[in-house]
Length: 262
Image: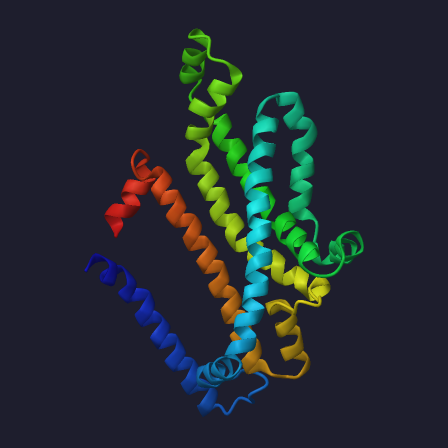
């Protein structure tokens, strides 16, 4: 019952938005190529379900690979940066640089360096999603209570023991937050990467389908592809949320509050 009560408001809001959208498009007689009604988008999705599913699987693979790379490399980078303030001051600005570089501007370079297709798209997803992981993991490690650090130092704990038994457990909530952000950004990075680098013998992803739909003025299919891309982002975000809940539910207040809310 709690789950139903929590789901009811967004479901009702969605029904109202879709109904108003459908009615306005029909009453105002908006051309299909400008703004299709939800019924036309649904028909396009049903008709092109095979192509949409195939494209979504290609994009999902690239986004997942990029996200996993950002999770591993981002966490390791945060650990390295946390080892020295001098090292952090020297290298952290370059991690910020990754976040500020327009991925569309460097996507052609990714094609030159990694070839068109999955590798370039994966790197695009990685570049877009790695910074939140580094920033949140580093902030979590830095936020460890000084008294606990002193206690570990008093008992002669090694650097590895301090990292694995104090710093990483303390940083886990912040790391999960960074991974939540990275999950959505990985899908965005994959779609943008496909705009430039996403053609290969194995077939294109949702980015290619969006471009082809735009060129053909198939706005209904374009909306359907965008919807599938959004669902990929939500799915990856949900997986991160679920993993974070299982990791934090026994000891961290945020997970207990989430469980109570549901």
